[in-house]
Image 1 (cartoon, rainbow, N blue to C red):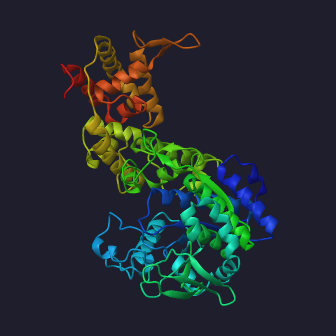
Image 2: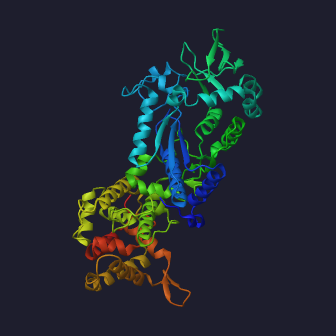
Image 3: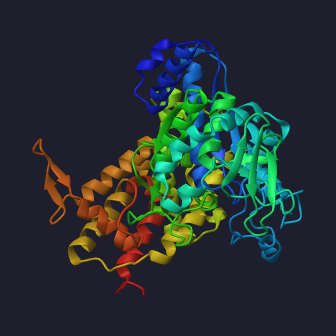
Length: 540
């Protein structure tokens, strides 16, 4: 990829980060960038995993476009960590409990599909990343330690043992301070990752001496060859130093860890990578998301209700600011993503999030001609989660459309049906129209039928939908809905549209109503309004 220094001026956070990364490489005289993202394989990949890898990927692409220099992205699995507790969502928990404290790659796989629990979760991580098309190199902590790739860095940390301890000790309480060492030997008999004080450090021999607190037995363990690993803050620094990592981002909860690991990296003689701190997600009420509370949104849920690109769109915006992650953000993210792709097709603007999501070029696949919000409306009008019912509406408006010809639209139809079934249908609350609302809705029916031939003569799409929307406005230009515009003309207040949604669809808001009427058909829309007005009261 050729360099484009002008991209430094693009007002998009990945380019701002890429500029910092370019400055680092220039200062160090490097000609290639190494970016890293970490993963703790004691659990399964989740929506945060997607966010971190996606955001790092966008910085990587921005850097490559800006500088033309080669890059690598390592997805590093901390699979040599000891298992601290048995996860809730695995089989054979009793078996796992017998192996607590051992490295994840030395614990049998409770699923029975891989050589270890760590290997199983690593495979899940790789399948997860591959499913989204991420480009990365997988790295296993176990492999790196056992193969000797960290040996030189471990020996240096051993030689600087007290200097490294001096970085961490002020952050610990008195009891932990007395026992802390950056090294965790693997017990040669039990296989457990030991957190014990060092009796001696022997840099000249490349070993540490420690005592098993349960038996009193003393051991001399090499720090090399996978017989020992580093405590996690020291481990992070060790990795940066040994591999020459240039860029890594992490969540707000790790700010102190980044600071300490950076200082240890400097003690070892390295330069810490450029770091970026992203905010964590809150739920719809602004509370911190917690697995135990179950108040978050899983990636599986998002992908049931929206395409992965919509999740990427949501992740892209303002990663340094706290955002609420809940079901309600999905419809807008889907429609905003599709609008972003249309803008990208019109102009390859690198400030457009779609530029980053789609690697600088819009997808070849045809975008749906119907918004996600309109599909949700159609599902509500039909009162169904059956995709075939929605397709019946769509084919009336777009006769040439079919699932086999519009695969993206078909996926979106299935997403919308699932979303309507799980989140909208259970919360719908219809109400009866007030006399003023009923009068305006009857006027809307009259206008729609009077102008039906006019609408039919217009091409399907935005032109026809805008004409129908004008009829919706015209029907609402009456008390108590009419409002005066700044230019002196008569407009329509929000109350009119809220009435349409609450009386006809059982919810308080939605997209422009003209698009929904256009797709369902004039006569069917009129029949729906008349049926709603005929109700004496809202159903329970």
